[in-house]
Length: 212
Image 1 (cartoon, rainbow, N blue to C red):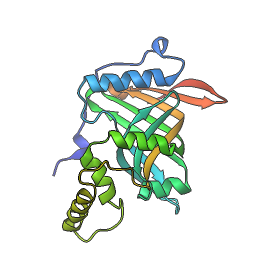
Image 2 (image 1 turned 60 degrees about the vertical axis):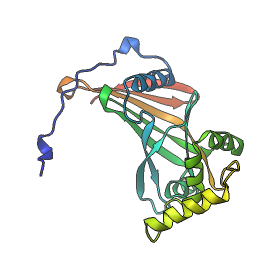
Image 3 (image 1 turned 180 degrees about the vertical axis):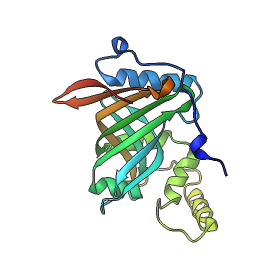
């Protein structure tokens, strides 16, 4: 077995200088996201989303970022999934983007709201047809007997909508995280990493540097 205690990496690809930091964070977030795309980071819009269950237990999973606004980000899911059930009771979430090729991390926290039904319908219509069928076939997070059962449900949904436009399922849609905090992390040598935290208070962004 690999000795994980000996795994180390020296970060050398950049830094966050105080004089170059913007007053509002979303400009920097969009810039970093664009640079992750240009660097051909695998799934640059993938984020680890953390929610809290009704019983107070944390859950985390990977989801895909599908919208960026001035002070919010959006992702889509089945509202009956575990994350959907968590957010219906505890409408707050945190997420982390990790762009290893650029030695960068972004952490976001905020309150969560469902997006407008019309917005969810508009986005659903842009999804690949296979993904649309999958949304109908999968009762997300619910137990299934085996792989065969999943494949049969997919085939049933595929036959149901053959030759037709596929509508958005009733229980499928978007969540918007209204950002209260966003932290930018840039790896540096000697573990003296840059950490810049933006916090939203009374409509104004406050910025501070954190020790690594």
